[in-house]
Length: 495
Image 1 (cartoon, rainbow, N blue to C red):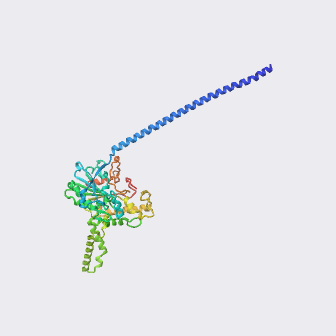
Image 2: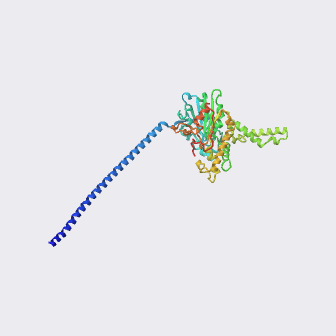
Image 3: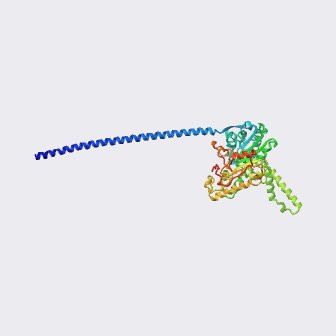
């Protein structure tokens, strides 16, 4: 019995173990199923979330693209495409020898006025540097700066040349003309280099084109404004009184605006006079002297010769004094007869001309003129070590000594206008403390219309377009000189 019982017990153990194993197995299976289901559900949730996120991101991207397209469309609606004005080739000018450097006819672009602006004209002289030697003139001759064959068939009119009443409220209805620049001496040269085939006929281009404009309606103008920037701004200074002479003073208001044309005879970073040497070559090569303002050439020539022949020291009697003065006059006569002027190059510098201009003129200039910094103050020839390379490309890279040099240049510019020029009630002035060059022909610096991309630099809360308009129409006197850098936070600096 006991054995049987014992045997029964012995048999019962394996039976109980098998049952437990099955139960354990079933439990594992259930757990596996549950875990698998949980994992599958989690994966599904994750996939759903991922898909949802992807969809959300996609929808956000689509909305963003839509907003950008809408913004672009709105911007296009606010800022129309610039006015494109076709070229006119003035073939008739060739008969008078008024030709570009390569012998092709001069050219201009005209957008007619309308309404109240029908009898008002802006004549804009294009800028674009100069050439002072054969190599530079050869390069220029083979470009739009020396040949009307290579000029654009149409160009945009912006800034003071704009037809937008919002961007250009005072002048948008006027007849607006841009005379193309293709001589290389600010419309003042007179000569011919037969060996190289260079026609230096800037003065003839100026004269022929203005006379043509007079013949097509400008002669009856009630208001005219001669403008230009850079080399064109210098041309305005040189020709302002000549422009006045084309019109009767009794019936036509004539004024001039020179933008970025106040090129100074200043020392460069090496202590030399880079721009003086450059201008001297231009005046000599292109025969500019006879066409420079006579009020300047007569004064400087007399001063120069009298410095060489100081009669008050050389003469010991009235007879000798008289003889010495006759000699001075003889030297001056010979200088003019040779069409060189004893000191004519100095009259290519505006600082020696502006006080003698009789026609009302407005000078618009950046005190830290970028072209002058790069090409006159710190040209490569004056900076062989490259110490100024970073500074003249980015004003924030200038060290203290370099900034002091630039501040001194700014002071020279202010001093050049603070004598006779600023004292004339008829003249206007806007010298801002910006690193810029040419501010009247670009919407972003001319206009106060922020919606159209404009944000004109301002002095005492008055922008450039407003300042020029107030001066021209006599709404206010404008003699605005900015405080030194870095006080002006309205600048549109280009370096």
